Image (cartoon, one colour):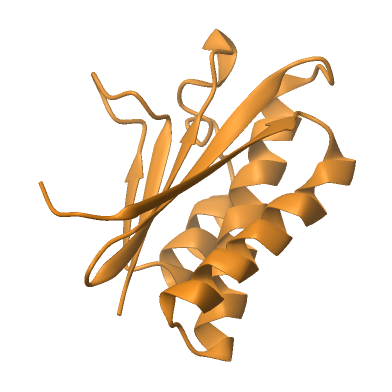
Length: 126
């Protein structure tokens, strides 16, 4: 396995903390060496997933974690939660807008993975 830096934050399922996720994504992506436009793309994708988690969780007392992994040639962002209801957060994305936004800004996205420790993983390559 390749060496990487791992940064993780745990946030409550409350809309007022999405800005914290965006700030963390911005700092990590900037530190990883992405240009300003790509940093903005990553922030949008992260906030889209966070908003979906919050909308599906429906309970401000729950939490989720965002894990940023800075690797040699890519940034991997994983989302995890122990909330059973949100194992597959985009399963009922009727209009597909959320998935379209994320797919447009990230290089690889793994939705609803089976037998993984995360509920969604997104990758942006350098």
